[in-house]
Length: 449
Ligand code: NDP
Image 1 (cartoon, rainbow, N blue to C red):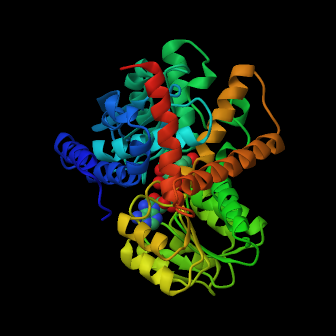
Image 2: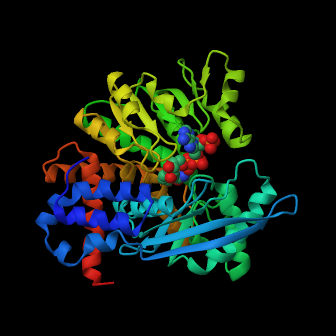
Image 3: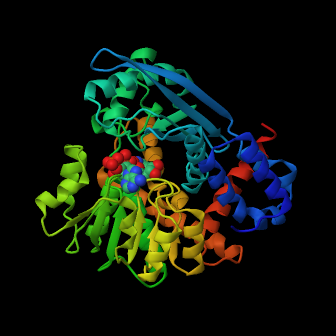
């Protein structure tokens, strides 16, 4: 663990006491605090204004009951969350996660990360996150719809296009956004397109939003490689997950001439040394909503391994963790390094443990941290909101071009910031400091609120 000064250690201690048992939140806060010392030394006014203390305390937290009826007529109860973390730069913005592991510690860590990520996009967005411990797996379409309607029946009073704008995340894709938007419209009697992002293309959605996080990840990885006189062309890539982020990262990587040799879901991974057939993965995961193990029925040359985390033992040039938090630990990082990995790009939020990050940074592995690397999704959500505000819809090429520009700018900003603070190449530190400075300066300008 990196040492931090007494002031930051006290803040960390208080964070643990006030947010008991919320391990993911403690981890996310610690990771940021470990990089802030040089900025706080340079700008003592931040400490006087209690910026760090305020940043780690959400502005508002909402927890609510979500009752719904299953197909057998049985009433079920889940818990809903919305954490409105920070509005210094704009309205709260961040996705909704539906997964049985969801509790306040997960939503808080995601909301905290989101505040920094949104700052990096250069768009006027604050940070927030929400979700529920509802498990959409194995539920019928009607059950998912009834759940979404009940969830929105409480959430609607807290959100709005100038207040708080949710989107998707794990377990929340286009189908769920549709149900949520329908219920919001019904309750409020307003077609307020800017209240949710990730909408369908014919009712206020933006082209490229579906692909944005995965494409954005590949754009920033390519930028990072080119900055080091290399490129994705001809590289072997391992991608964890087979959801929204993983699938579109794979799509863009293939377009740029790379080969994806392994992908996973929460049960296991498939290894296809000749290159994964992405159309087959899309069919299994997007259309049929089935298990990735089915891939080997269609492609007998591939092998299936029933342990997701073992995916990191596969030899590759580039590793893209795109599934979930803490999926890549020190042992996995060790095998990647031993196998000569060149670069890591974090598509998921906080997928690498602190020990894994330390190992990558110490071995000079090019490492694009989540806050920067997966910001393409929210950046394109901001482009969706812009189109909604203008009553316009842009072509795929126009949105994609803007997304590429944003990812390049993020890379330039975080690498220049790392350099400015004498940590050349340390992109996690560059991302934390660059985003912290933006949010902190806005908070200073706005007084003690
Ligand atoms: P999806 O629900 O579309 O996909 C998640 C994928 O990860 C599924 O394939 C799931 O498998 C798999 N998975 C879950 N847990 C594990 C595990 N322990 N090991 C291996 N695979 C696992 O979610 P998204 O693709 O949208 O999100 C993935 C990550 O990216 C999350 O961390 C999210 O916060 C982050 N992110 C997403 C953005 C977006 O725009 N969607 C934007 C920025 C970040 P299974 O099918 O078995 O559930």
